[in-house]
Image (cartoon, rainbow, N blue to C red; front, top):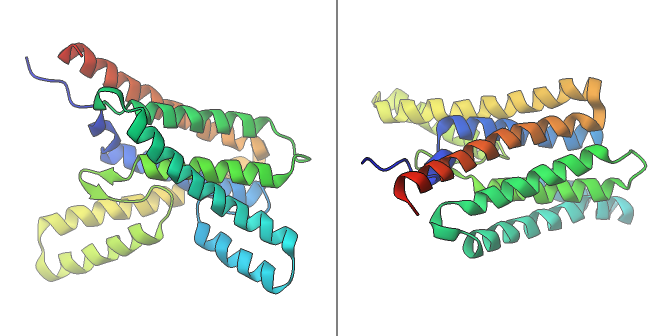
Length: 231
């Protein structure tokens, strides 16, 4: 009997990476458009805005910008804790828990009204993006980010240069992979900008549905692997 593919491989598929990066772009655009011009995952932007608020002695805006950074940091710690403590049989059960948390947060946020303090929403979304970033970060053995485009864009251009210099297939492949990630992030941001015109804060539910798709396939991989290997 040939063993079924390990569930970890699902998270490393190129298609999974593209899909998750599109979700990352959608989340960042969503919080920027619908929740006060604050980024969910781009903490560099939030840090800059925090510094600007301090120079203007606007402590309210400073808190609005710095707390998502803190929530993002906590999210990374939480993802690592779940990974190291809840990874039963090393089958990536922990990814199921992470995805379930993300879906729950997206569902709740969609129900919240505009009169709810924006800080509650932006910190929740920053926590969520940190969980996704820490959980899915490799594709076909290559490191990548599904929440930022700067690093992916740099790798795109690096591999473009190397391919033009050497004409080696490996650099062409990496160029296509990383270029696809940048395009996926852009598509996700475009998706949020269009959907927000019609659904406003409910746009986050579309992200929740997309995450459910990822969750279903992750669980399916685990069940098939368990059945084939009788764990």
